[in-house]
Length: 215
Image 1 (tube, rainbow, N blue to C red):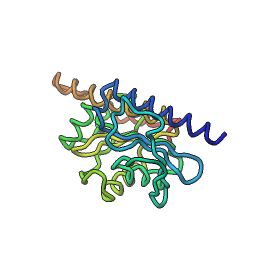
Image 2 (image 1 turned 120 degrees about the vertical axis):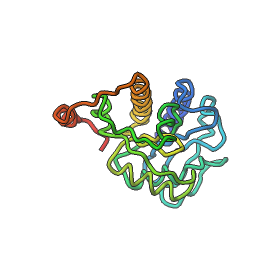
Image 3 (image 1 turned 90 degrees about the vertical axis):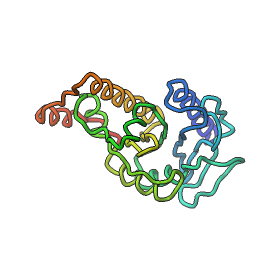
Image 4 (image 1 turned 90 degrees about the horizontal axis):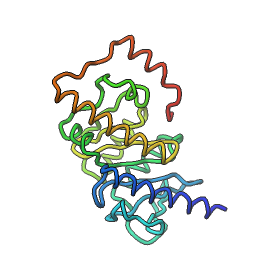
């Protein structure tokens, strides 16, 4: 029964990889996906594999606390980042890191997605902070991202991309799609010359509607 559950999660990860690739949120081997298993293990995508062609057997198991790898292959270079999030957020069961074009453009420009323009953004995210740049794959990046995600379910990574978390992989993927929609909408509104911000009273009402957060 335990193996059947793990196989199902492996299949979910491969489907999520195809979804991100088909939606243009990752290119070729970019990005990484992980899911928490029962106990102290995490399933994570391997390094150097096209997310659109990922197979269940290629996904690796990594120990949450000591980084031990169970399986053949090299886990994602961002494994420390994923593990740091799971350790600090016991409510999170899935992590998605991608390079969505519009969101990554904001990240490269050093602009957080915090302007209160879209009601859906406020209800889903509250705000989307910008994590300062650190070299990919380093413990420093893992520390910075985990700190930002203590109070948020999504963040931009400066000069790098975006990250989302969820109680399920479907939720984490959905937040990544919503994050990119938000970035694209804000980009286009600014291109038209004016992104009208919501009033403080309306923002307060929308925050009150956040009845189903990940936390």
